[in-house]
Image (cartoon, rainbow, N blue to C red; front, top):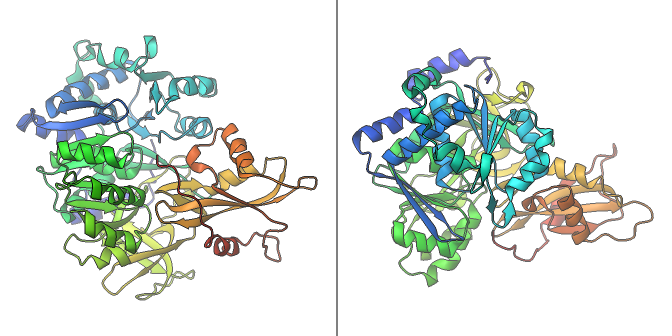
Length: 554
């Protein structure tokens, strides 16, 4: 898989010189643990709906992942080819990542909320060779969904279904057969071993173009984020990591899939977010660290007073995905033992800025942190002039964990000759280097830490027979950060349109539930510039006063 080669040699030389890149891949970290403490616990995986608990040692995880790696190779997965998985936070995803690393395949985690429209594009764009899905999760049949679109995906040679039967059963194909006894795995893994500069992760992120972008990362870019992140938070092998944030997000992947192996620590997985379940699991497993978006924190604060003692072990809660409301941090201080850490990052970088545990609590209220080691941030105006402390402008970032390109979209790789990446966010930086995200230049709404691809949803709504014009903007929400509001005008002959009609129309187009508008306003005219462009800033101002009934918790 091709990375952006422009300036890469110079970047590599600098990253090696400063010690940011150490040229190690995840299986090398795993091999160290297996040689030292193979019986130490690697992962404890909870399936909330069935109250099922699975525990694996590092020795067991290594053996399973080696078998899976040999099986994937036997299925025809070549080095550099993509293995996609649409999985909840289950141990199988951690094993699958290790298996792909053994044979140089690229893992492409996909959010469980994606449906036909998103999957059809992403799997085709990635030219996915093998796809792993659950039979059912949260009462949705993934195997049936994939069967309905498989004819549109000529590159997809194998679908493996966890909990499935027959030739597509994940368990039958990859776990029950002793693939490691049918091939010389030592030779296979030596031949297929990727370098630390090979692409090993593909994650899709929503942008302003209406199409998701495939973000490409290497072992060097990912671990150069994990190491300073863990060091800033003083995490080590004695810590217990709890991951309820989806591992198909960069947050869950970096700090729930990679960081435990790097630290030689234990990770506890929760597949369905439920604050009360989190508390019960925490009482049993004694986690010391977790990271998630603001809604998770809000829910824990709500349940903590009635769950005395459940969260006593939790030392660090990192919140990212949207600025933390100050009132939430203050409430957390009264009911949670954990230090609340504010962070900002992107799929393209992982966490870039983060407060220190030693900082005054006000830092998490009023900032999104200061740059991690090996990363730099700056704010500049539209004329590319760097701005001073407190001045709002365009946020740029560069450094070790910056991704290496967008899949098949080199023209979108907005990195200048000095290595600065335009994030699309607006921010200020104070005299001490702490940033505050103040807005976005990208046309994206962030609901509960999940980016909503505004342009794509707008384009679909334009297909509705009653809608003549549409604009989607965010309105503030204490728990989710933002909710999506739709402003529309109607064609002649249509006198009314309801929110239910709009959401039903989009659902029939295969749009995920999280991407559906939650407020609809029909207008005579949308505000426009003299050239006819919709003035979304005016609609955003209107949306500030909208109050939507609390969302049902996922």
